[in-house]
Image 1 (tube, helix red, strand yellow):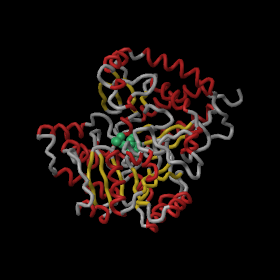
Image 2: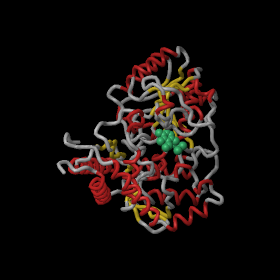
Image 3: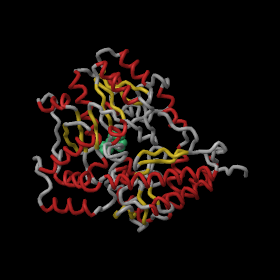
Image 4: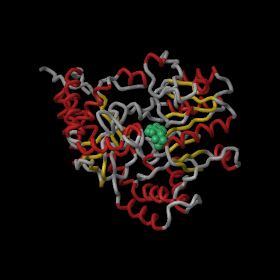
Amino acid sequence: MTSTAVPGDLAAVDTLVAAEEERFLARMPRSRALLAEARGSLVGGVASSWQSAPPQAVWVTHGKGSRVWDADGTEYVDLHAGFGVMLVGHAHPVIVEAVSKRVALGTHFAQPVPDTIVVAEELARRFGLPRWRFGNSGTEATMDAVHLMRAATGRPKLIKVEGSYHGHHDHVQFSVYPTLQDAGPEARPNTVRTGPAIPEELAALTVIVPFGNLDAAARVLAENPGEIAGMLLEPAMMNISIIAPPDGYLAGLRDLLHADGALLAFDEVKTGCTTGPGGMTQRSGVTPDIVCLAKAIGGGLPCGAIGATEAVMQLVEDGVYEQVGTFNGNPLTMAAARATLTEILTPDAYAHLERLSARMAEGANRILRERGVEGHVAALGAKGCVVFRTEPLRGYRDFLAYDDRWGHAHWLYQHNRGVFLPPWGKCEQWTLSVQHTEADVDRYLENLDGFTAQVGTKVGS
Ligand code: PLP
């Protein structure tokens, strides 16, 4: 950051978005044809609503190492990483071998397989929680966490952070991305359902607080005596760019909740294994009662995991809460997770990720400074993003005030020049993989330089 930075030019951003969207569509006739064909049977032409970002979904044919290829044959440096899953990179030889071996031995029995023990032991070592179960997605992991907190305390209510996404089950589908009009007072936000699929009646069971504000959490506990089962939060927010927790926040929450007889659950679906070997749990030194994992732990296969204390998991042991699922601990997933955790995500791999991350952050900050564009890098481990404003984002209200057009324009610009970032620009962040190289990082930086040259207001000019 620089004291001489001035705001970029939003009119220039608008002009750029129009030109880049046109270029984007012109590059992808095959993706457009596939989309038209898909619309006949596939709702919106995609398998999941967030696979379609404007101006159009990109159809991908294959990936190898740090690269992916679209249906029109264009090669990209992949920093989307399937919404942060592909920390191992694409078609990693160790994953290919582990999964191929497993396929030949049968892929599903709904019975435990030995790999599951290795994965559970490794997660216990990394996250400092002794007992584990598996599922198939982040949504299932956070749903189990909410159920377990209620079962453990006999209390109904959940504390949730404004602007956090924890998957699509009912009790976390409140105040995900509310409008400013609906959101209410900043220190005491309204509980806003995401839409008519979620019954308004459930709003009374989810109490919303701003991120980073211990007083707000203390107030909610005081105002709901004996009713709060626990709090579910991302220990670093990762769906409104990246927002690290203020010093002492996570430990403070743990102490407040425990003093009240309530539990603390970390949603490490995005942060787990990407911010370090034991995620934010290890990084912060604050061990929650429950940790939820998914995404990167499965090496590219659908997975979810939940770890907890002996006391919490005794409820599962005793059948008070039946943690179940036909595909839980699927052999193919477990083979990939075992390979990921024990063979690929080694200390050397983390050192490589930290080196690349430092190169990204230093390079991007330098470019912003040289181009005189307001902005800074927010990065944690393998994940990071450029935020096109000088002040760091502290929570959802700052995120709302941060213009959407910056992230979208940057995403388009990078995409049109061979770098695939996750869509929904200002919400998301890059994920580096163990197979990325310095040349991949430099490609991103070169594009950022070109982008800021077009939209920045050069100091002194
Ligand atoms: N929690 C967080 C923080 C997430 O970002 C997501 C998905 O992006 C989820 C939970 C839900 O995970 P899944 O999409 O695997 O259900």
